[in-house]
Image 1: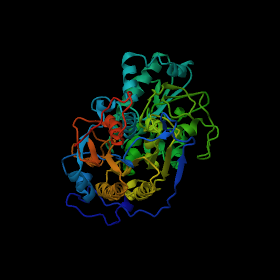
Image 2 (image 1 turned 90 degrees about the horizontal axis):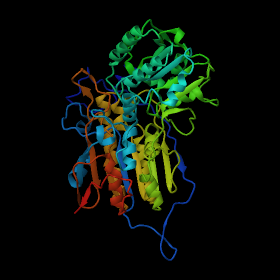
Image 3 (image 1 turned 45 degrees about the vertical axis):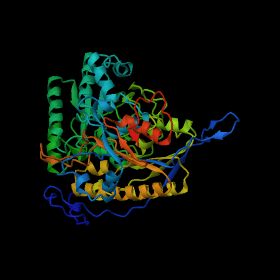
Image 4 (image 1 turned 180 degrees about the horizontal axis):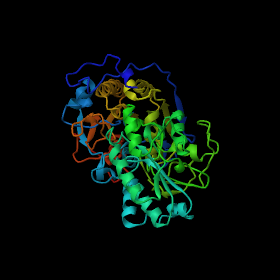
Amino acid sequence: MADNRLIDCGYPPHPRLPESRYPPPACPPSSAIMRSVLIAGPAPLFQINDSGSRIMPQLTKPIVLLILDGFGHRLEGEDNAVLLARTPNFDRLKAEYAYGTIDASERMVGLPTGQFGNSEVGHLNIGAGRVVPQDITRIDMAAEDGSLAANPALTAAWQNPNQTVHLLGCFSDGGVHSHIDHFFAVIEAALAAGMQKIVVHPFLDGRDTPPQSAEGYLKRLEDYCAQHPQVIVGSVIGRFYAMDRDNRWERVEQAYNALFGQAPFTAATPLQALTDAYARGEHDEFVQATVIRPEGRLQDGDAVLFMNFRADRARELTQALTFDDFDGFARQHRVRPAYFASLTAYGKQYAHPVLFAPESIRNGLGEYLSAQGLTQLRIAETEKYPHVTYFLSGGREEPYPGEERILIPSPKVATYDLQPEMNAPEVCRNILESIENQRFDVILCNFANGDMVGHTGVLAAAIKAVETLDDCIGRIVTAAQAAGGEVLITADHGNCEQMFDTGNGQQHTQHTTNPVPFLYIGRPARILPGGALKDIAPTLLAMLGLPQPAEMTGHSLIEFA
């Protein structure tokens, strides 16, 4: 994979891009673009006046919200794709219109202190218009007060002390999809309950943590196993395979087979597996499946606990393990766990027990717009489609009345530094078409480039991604203004504004705690300070001239002149 990235694809040279640190990406292959539209069934709701006639609120049309995923604000220019990119449109708009920054991490979005934000958390807060307590915080508190060990969905896994319990999930302290501390809290609870065999299957991170950081996590696990012989490691694999979310079933198949003791590689210990993988040129995320203890394979009668609290990258492997009508690949092993549970709910179609049920979010942005009789479009490419739909709607799968959805498939490349523009041009084209036909009062869009390319750690590609976004921004703003509309540009968290970690000398592939842009393109106004993601929905409602519902505790950040 490294060799084919050395092809010169015409990325602009920059004095801060030494090839030893940032080899230029390869030219992307051409790919077909497909399009699907999901339309809510019922007619939209309307307000009714005293004479029984339908009335619509007075508003500027259309209102466009652009969420630039992983596009943070950082003043230092070195290794900063946002500042190193050529962005004439974004620069001009910041100079001419109301611009500020808002918080997108830590307690301001319901996360622990020091924890960077992520796409799920960001879109939940954006759509809710309030701070949404996050699953990681709920689980942390349950582990601290002892209620985790007593959780009925957990204790059901060890009704029989002779039953083997398997723990699988992202094994790091990244805190985006899981947390290593939760593994050890559950293991302690299992040991206290008298369980005699606990098998851990770590999915290595390297995406929400530095690319070569797994050694510390695996060393901690090995030391723990040495002190507790009931605990063993069954297999090791990178999250690239085990946590796919783009229907790349050939990846998931490798992770699935590893759980049953079949893998391309074997090793005596997890650390040896990591050493071997590094020798093959694989960083943590891309470590191929390695069996450690064959007796740790999944067998009839075993229990499985999926430790990921974020749903999107846990769903595909869960389907392979639990769905009777699964057709992603031909399963060589048809062992269905005697018990399967996860820390959180993965969606309505997943019927297994969960330890922490979702909390209801009422009167979020999508629901409220629908209740006002307004039409809305949700649009993103595959990688971020669940975020602009499911998560932005507070965990609701179905469209609201008056809501339409457009899914633009993400390009089929191994990593997005190979095609940093992704399918942003096609997303943009659909937005321009939607603005022109004036079918929607509100357009809610996610552009995935900043985050997905930022995760690769390749600065030249991230610069190209940002420049692609700038072109899209210019086109969309021009079209919206021509139609008499307004645009709000922001992000859900930071990423591509920091592409190298001088502390460890590695590419920076994870999110950041930096603030994110907040740019209002419309009437004369200024941006109020001290804002966070919770204030985006109230701001949109203010742009529409609508009062915000009582459930929204954020406030509009626009002070009109």
